Structures are given as structure tokens and as C-alpha cells.
Length: 155
Image 1 (cartoon, rainbow, N blue to C red):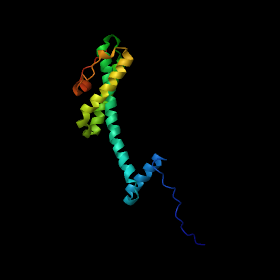
Image 2 (cartoon, one colour; image 1 turned 135 degrees about the vertical axis):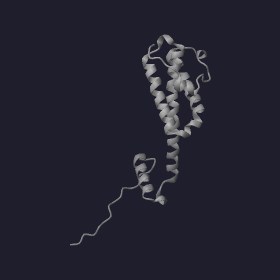
Image 3 (tube, one colour; image 1 turned 135 degrees about the horizontal axis):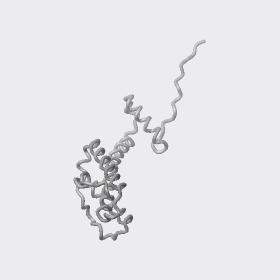
Image 4 (spheres, helix red, strand yellow; image 1 turned 45 degrees about the vertical axis):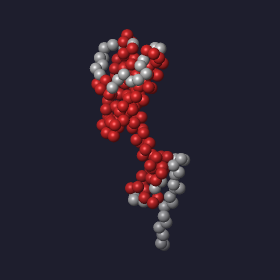
């Protein structure tokens, strides 16, 4: 008795909009196999751009949290806490790591700081109850202050 080899049935390709996880695995397999004619060029390009935007957002988020706690420490010294210090130090490490992993972001640090400050200012006003005029509209911190300004553990 002879058994003919039948090709293993392949699942239908996942559409990008319906199952991004399966689609990503399929696209990676196609790229690795050199089947460039079968790849979803437009959506792969979009995903690659999304990675870049995510890394920028990650940097801006770290800066936002650092500046939020710097603003609160500067405007309400009587409320200083060790958790604010911990948050500042942790997010400094995150920002430094993001910049080290993505050197191309260095050219966008000023933009990230400005966007982060706008968000940090809103949060600081909400969390402290201070009037809007108590905090400058433009960022008072440069990269050096955000990343290296000395912060004491004691309140």
C-alpha cells in the first residue's frame, strides 16, 4: 500500500485588521523564507513606523513622569515623598535606556520634553490644586535638569 504525501492544509492567511498577532507571525515567516512577493508591504511599513512612534512616546512618557514629580517637589516642598524620588530615579533610568536603545531619538529630545511638560503641567495642576498660573506654560527644565538634577531621598 502506497501512501501519497498530501500537503498539510494551511490556514487561511490572517488579515491584518482581523488578527494582527497571526498576521505578524505570517509576515515574519514570509520575510524569513524570502517570499517577498507574498508580503503585505503597506501594513508592514505601517507597523515599522508604529514602532518608531512607540519609542518616541515611551521617551516622552518617562520625561512626563519625571517632570510631574519635579513640579510637585518644586511647588509643594512640604509634601515631598520618597515615592516621588523613586519615581524620578526609575523613570530617569527608563529614559536613558530608551535613548541608548534608540540613538535616533536624540534629535527629538526637545520635542519630547515640550510634549511631556505640557502633559505634566496639566497633571500637576490637577494633583496639587495649584492655580494654572502657578506653573509656567513653557518647560522650565532642560534635559540636564530632567536627567541629572540632584534629588534627595529625605523629604
